[in-house]
Length: 412
Image (cartoon, rainbow, N blue to C red; front, side, top):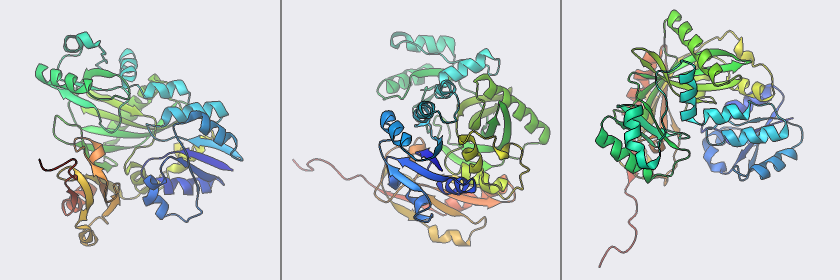
């Protein structure tokens, strides 16, 4: 019996393979680039799963391929890029899955904002404008400071903080030259610390599994830098947060599966940044497995099979709190390696380096998550202490780059 996985996040494939085995299923990974998963595949037995290299944007071809897959029982699509492709294929094949209309809504950040505003769950709404009147409309309808962003953006790409009219005009001009995945819109900028709620929903009920801290770069950028899990909210405050998340997800019709809900804790209460219909990226899934003491990917498999995940009701044994730091180089260029890795063995918190880039890869963008070459992970008794361990370990490392090769003729 087979569970197919349409691409995957950078880390977590090993947990997913073991989760499938727990339920007597074999995992088949559909990917356009096997090398993307080299870190995980190198740590698995060669026959642990089936890897099929194919065009993962070709809905017709994928539908035909999966239709011919013996004993196919479910499809997992856990990335932003392939969310809608997976939903369409699952619907075509009659496999268990969330309503594609709900997933389309989650991939439209402006529509989500306005749905929550209509439900009284956010103080601000999204505003889109025509090219001819963008500046005036955005200032009038949203007010400053505001955030301009792509309705279908990922990884903090194509996001601009605008605090005054010159910044607004500069952002609009820059956005006009970008290729967006969706449409440009503006929403209020909510000030305060950023968190991510890691939730699991089934039959319309949401369980808050924990909250990840999200330490960001200084304004005006939104580069993610440090994450820790689980944040130690007082129980009463945690209960209020869980009820709010239940209402937020219900408002957009999200009835089943993991969600990764980014929010700002403002002076007036929590405000949604975005809702991702998946488990958290980077090492969030890994951290959840360790900190909760269970393989949370089992819930992903059960949901793909159309079963109520046991994680909805399980007593969680717990484990160490975790933290990780994204490793960015000091300058763009060709990635050449990481200096100082040998020092991690003598540092507290069992720190480890999880590579994302390979030597020779180009690192061009340092203002968003496209720029990190790997992740420094560490553990401790609390998220606060784990953060200290991870930051100390990251400070001992240097992500190295060399200038891009010159092109064209150098002389005259």
